[in-house]
Image (cartoon, rainbow, N blue to C red; front, side, top):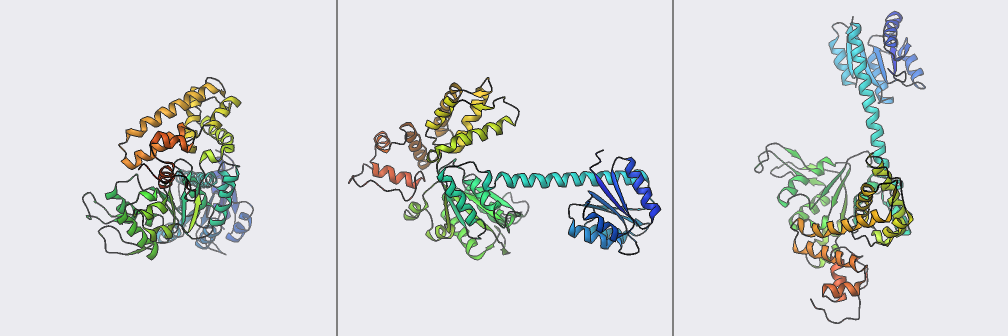
Length: 466
């Protein structure tokens, strides 16, 4: 048993306190004995225990008052109450105040030892969860996002400016560019960071189930609704709801989402009860919503409600200087899994990666690095492993183009991205391959969010082929 596991015993009956102290010391715990609540409170300021065991009836401050004070000032301390036989009401009151458990006098040594062991296990688990939460927040903080390029520096600055504001945020950028990472960084940098961050991909859930997923439903409201269910808005109350691929939301659901944003109220599917919600919305899309508004595919009023603070995530080809940092991070990440001995990448291999156009952005780069680490036989990723991985990635992209039976619109988007990659983003050549004018190519790229909405159209063409 580790001596770092500290226990405080508080009892004005010195003999009883000594018995408990000796018993637990023999079990390997570091035990401090206090003869009053006042003494315990004074000493705990500089020596906080993992577990505190207190008697109920004491001369100065009784055990219940001590428990209340400990729970208020030291919420991570697990508390146990010792109470006389027959004082069940006191025991229940102690647990209402936050005590882990109670034990009645006289007690068997084995009973106390088992109870303390469980309390220590709870303390350990509580601390591990706390550390894990801190690490999770750290992993999605602004400082943890990899990038030193000017394009990313402006994003970092914007995150810091908007994090504390309650306004809705619209994040735009190509698929795989890291929009959710940015959304989490905004959440974890603001006042809502201790509250839930609930992500949902609007394309991943069937249309007929999405309303129920967002707003919840009541039992019997539709076939399969065997129980009441909370919606994600209610789950995210006082926190942040991240709506990924908001551009794929149907017009009827757009209207309902607008109503929720305006009224801050939800009504579960099939229910009559109105529920108040306080949710910050961060939406993301790879599409150009302005074009979709013009085409009648996205509500203009909803667009302005979401686009209070616009954040554009640059494509990887716009921040090539960040690739070495990203590669280093991915190598460390996959090496920590213990499945690869790779520790570095050669200069030649890195040059190959920096010359690639990365239509799949950071996600594609991560996949290539992982595959190259699997193929590498030494501690360094060589050029051949990168080339093999890049070819495999390209082949996989073509296969995926048809694998999931995409819509015609989605297929067109993917095909344009693939052609642009093959011609190294040269629009004249891409337009020829696609059989359209440069003006049409620009319009298509804006529609699918492949370029900024502010990109200038070519003015040297008066006609279009489609």
